[in-house]
Length: 258
Image 1 (spheres, rainbow, N blue to C red):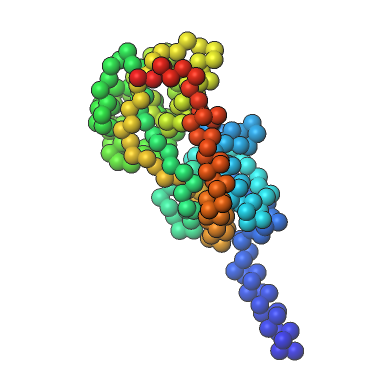
Image 2 (image 1 turned 45 degrees about the vertical axis):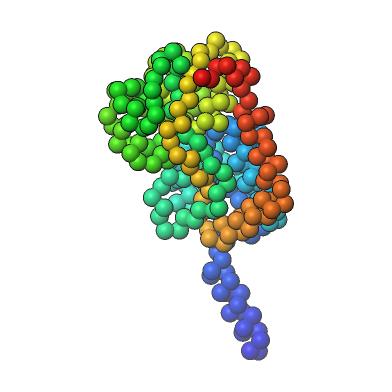
């Protein structure tokens, strides 16, 4: 009888502490931005970040992932409200119950201008006096004093559609666009397939940004980290990142960049 009571108490305890702990055979929901190539391609659920996430989970026996596309701000809310299990981009104030994983990779945000403008942008302060179009929630993702500077610009706007940033720059509707370097290179490549493009200058005035995945479940985050460590040690991670700068974001005319 004591043995049965022990088993009963153990089961109840496990249920109490593990109600929100996804098991390997449960569906894991991952929230990502719909416009994030080469990191995310929504048409076939691939890209650098998604392949890393899928491989890390797979190494831990988790293969049933539901990729949900939404804006960064919506992903933050959904993660905090337990509507999704994982968010790829999270710039919230790190409330209790949100757990970052190890870094998946690093982003390199840059400022990009037309070469003909001959702008000397060597620091974030050199954006002053210019019109800037940035990616959505850039003031949350880019470290200070960026947000303070944006309040003093001639014009500042953030958009979710990063492909539009290239178009606005080429049409000279803005002086500078701010976005991640690989994302810009990818969209520039796509843009030049159907448009005449102008030479650009890339200004690396921002520090590299680590990009973990974010979880609202500590057990799942730790399991994911074990998977990430495994694929790094096995070489699978390097195989995924070998696409970086080539297949995913290749410039067919390097002369476009000065």
